[in-house]
Length: 371
Image (cartoon, rainbow, N blue to C red; front, side, top):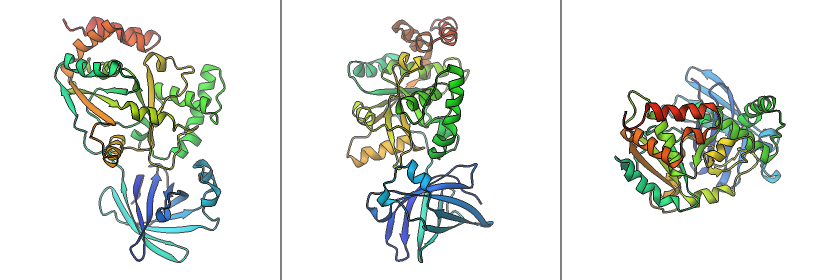
């Protein structure tokens, strides 16, 4: 039995009282990871390394210990760092459910229990509105063309929002920032001839933005300030499919959420708290970001939509206030792409170079409404 993934839950003392919340992160190709925890509900975060060993076929031991490197990465203040001698052992028995683990912990003569639940995407989200006609969608979109600040994302199906990083089943962003992104930055310097300093917020943003737009896994999602650019990406995914999904999907993030998120972006993407935030890095070397009126969201969560739904509930908002979901019938693809072409929204305008031109001509010559 081995465990991996992103787990949330709480630890309790031997008398049953709750000590605080816990977050366990273990990549599927590792037998080590780390844990974030908040003891006593005081609002301050602790972080520690975790090594995993198998005791027998149905029992795992987690050895938890202080890590100064992790404390530095998470910027834990000196007064809340763990003592050098900190140790804890957690014994995990057979999982009660496929996505739940429970066990007993021991540390400094104290004991208690622990129960954690793996974060999963779950079933597809039900749209707030469904449009069978392209003009009906345009009526919805036109409400936002004169309003500044909202962000939109188009997808060729009803699948959930999830970053390319999390789709790899990796969850450890400390490892990503320390190991993966520097390798990409090194190759980027070779290709582009520049020098990127990842400790600089400007260079970090440029590197991770280029990574996102060139297929390297990142904890980012692409968004645009135009609902029509979002619709283009949704329909472009399905127009040539022999068996397209019944609907494509467009998401809208509220202007208020985007505006507040922009002020919280840090130099790197490591954040000890569950986070979904808007992110607008420099467009240095990334013409696509400008052409697509683009911005990103960053998330250290697998289930972005569930996180935003819970935030709406916590703030007593109407569902769909922060994140609105609309579906459009995919049989409108040819008509929509032709209309978008007349608006000047095509692959040729969104993607520089021959690839964009070729895709533009493909849509125009092979998938026009009258064919």
